[in-house]
Image 1 (cartoon, rainbow, N blue to C red):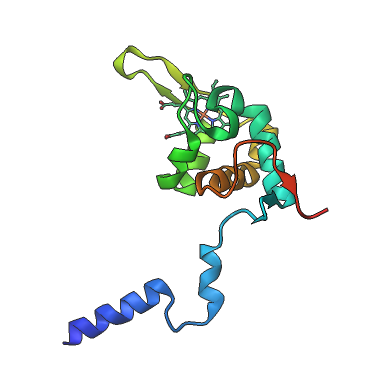
Image 2 (tube, helix red, strand yellow):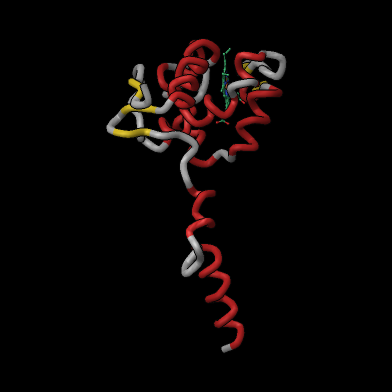
Length: 139
Ligand code: HEC
């Protein structure tokens, strides 16, 4: 009985039940999309992605024969893993392949706007945006 009650309390905490709404901030998505239009940061992420990543990861991060889909990857990949991969790159030599994800750790256009790029890709991954050029709502 006692254990059950603790379990319930833990659940309530986990889901923010009965707590002030401050706990919900963590669950807000890292992008803003209103009527298919995006905020400045998400738009910037779209542009930076287009410059640095799209040639391998395809339009809107949908993937290509060179590199995997990031819309799929971000459904399970954590923010920390994403940042780590982009900073350090990765090389996959499995099955005789030689697929290289370049390291962007010294690329200021990527490092400075990492969160914008992540936000844009997360919006794509969540299905909140199509792959083309989005419009902005905040101007
Ligand atoms: C030269 C081609 C190329 C470019 C440019 C490139 N990538 Fe990659 N990326 C790859 C390849 C190839 C892989 C898969 C590596 C592997 O199999 O381990 C990859 C993997 C990743 C992964 C891990 C995906 C997963 O499923 O684990 C992330 C995240 C990623 N790239 C993000 C980016 C971002 C963000 C940019 C732009 C800043 C970028 N990539 C630019 C080729 C590229």
